[in-house]
Image 1 (cartoon, helix red, strand yellow):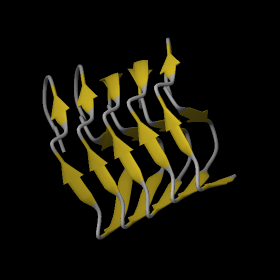
Image 2: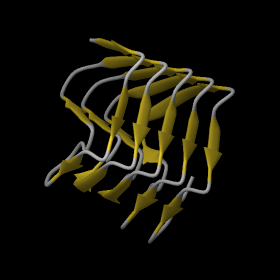
Image 3: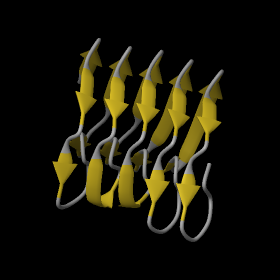
Image 4: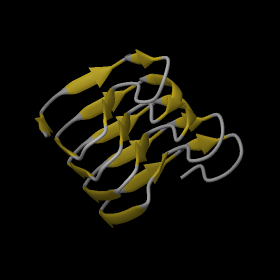
Length: 117
């Protein structure tokens, strides 16, 4: 699935995936995921598959684990800012199983235990 030119903000989930939850793979182009909350993992995005992101912003999201994104597969990212996300455990910016990053900025992400980036 591909999502283009969308802003999702202030979404709230009592499980994983505050703004977006999918068991498959996903492409985000020019998407803003802002100030979403998850009681589980990945307040911005929780995916079972691969995530491709371009020209997007993931900012101000908060989760029990992996604040910005939680990706079961590989994160491929170009020109995205992942900032000001918080995790109650590990991975303030997120948690992935592999990453290919081009001009990606991780800024001011925080985790209670480790790996704020």
